Image (cartoon, rainbow over all chains, first blue to last red; front, side, top):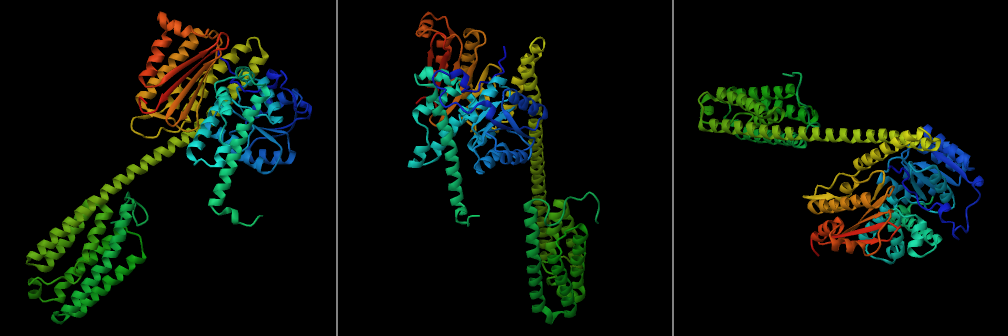
Length: 247
Length: 383
């Protein structure tokens, strides 16, 4: 009995009990760019999205193309294959983030390269999904990401937990690292995500609302990305890059 | 002398030790020449043809300068140098009277020929060193006719010099060759790894696609989809296993992620940090065996279609492995009851294993809500 669905979390359909306040715009309005180097897969994804009422405004087959088309069309969501030729997934994410777009990135990959996934998320991706996810899971994930809600797999939650432990172990406790560390509750929620619970199950387990669970996951992602930026700035200062004149 | 199939030659190629030796010879040569010039200037009064001595030294000086400018060290260059050394030694017979030579006077080039002996040793190993030393020794013997104690002494020193330096350069060349071969193999493995990842990624894409479309189309195609899904799961496990960084070569330590990663398949997912979780080999194997038993229990007792998740967490002083399933679950107290009646392997085997390692296993289960097992293990045996 094989279950191909590797369990993306946080499909809005499963947690509609009072948690659906502030649903994103109608699917019709959600614009998407699909970047994937496999034409077969790219077309299938684009077709699925179109069938579900999303508007696929562009497709790209390599990293630079993905950045270019995303900047040109400013979609709500960039569905990004992690292994594109030309640019690494985290580089594409960083480029999109750096451009100051409101575009959210949903990373898709067929073979989970742990470090790469983590780097992409640190560089600003909002969600991560294995390609084996079912069509419904995928469409839900696009909707979630479009609404700014983080989409985690258990594997990603494990990586993020590990990353926070590493950061906590590596840095001397300062007010900065403390603020960027996870709260007990956030750790608890993340551990439950990592052991395969859906947001709805977590909400029931912890006696909190579905929305609160989402917020907790959201916060961990925000802290991770903020920490990444803090590290970059620290690196820049250490290298004396901050003294160069603004361009 | 310049034959095909030579070893890589010249200052820039070859192992660093050899390059350093070449530089040393470049330093040795002018110093030896200066020493010879000093000797000649001191003794020029007693020489029959001092001008010849100065001419010989002039030629050697020119050659020394040429070699400083021209970095190539071919057999032809070193052969020329050896010939120059021999001629310079033999020229001593014309510079000094036989009586002075028999009395043990130094040759015109002095210790300068030692440079060429070392050169041959570096270029051609101990055989080259001994060969050049032999040639210079023969020239010395020809020059002196009646070997003095000094001559014999110098000849032995030359042979030792040539042999020892040659042996050293042989060793460093062999070491260098082995290192380069290893680096080559490593690069090939890495490249193959990279290619394999690309290929695997493509195959995974295709399998995912078949799985997804097949499931949607239904009917007989659904069977194909199931097969594709099974292969997809296996391949993904293989790929993610291969992409793990090689375990740090810490004596007797092993990356727990690698051990538990083997359990990942269609219904079992493993979540882990991005960095290696190093444990003593014995401890890691025991822990992995305990996890295996928990997963076996999931298969046996959790019901059809139950999935399981394994989470590895590294808290420096202890490692936590959490295994959760979404199966039928058990009523609280069942585990204790089972332990009491001795019917279930859970309490005995898993608890026992973990307790032996100084850790603890905590069970949490509710009917219909699956079971969670948390295995906590301190690093370095009992706390």
